[in-house]
Amino acid sequence: MKEIISTPAAPAAIGPYSQAVLWNGMVFCSGQIPLDPASGQMVDGGVAEQTVRVLENLKAVLEAAGSGLDKVLKTTVFLKDMSEFAAMNEVYARYFAANPPARATVEAARLPRDVRVEIECIAHTGH
Image (cartoon, rainbow, N blue to C red):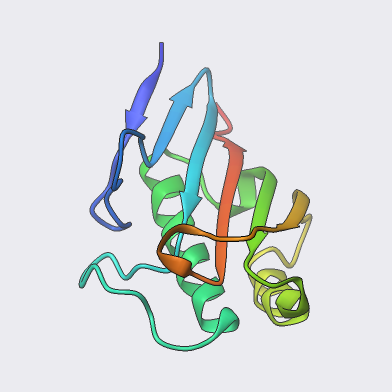
């Protein structure tokens, strides 16, 4: 049975979608952007600071689903500008230091709220 995941520890969905959907031990997380869940405001800084916030938001959603970053199987990273790949990747590598997931990274012409990075993922719960 499909279970909708929602947590105040990550930004609320701003449209007709869920933060994540849990189905049969699999967690499908919607893309997260660098909004601070407490203030609802965009974080200051460049792509590195935005990547930290995005991954912290994903971590919160995964934990609400009974999973975690260590159980991520696949990510998709959307960058406003591929020239910022190295800065994003340096932060990303800290969050996925051991046994990193599969990943695709694409440059997107425009992301929600003109952010520099958005990341979505698929994970399992281990159950």
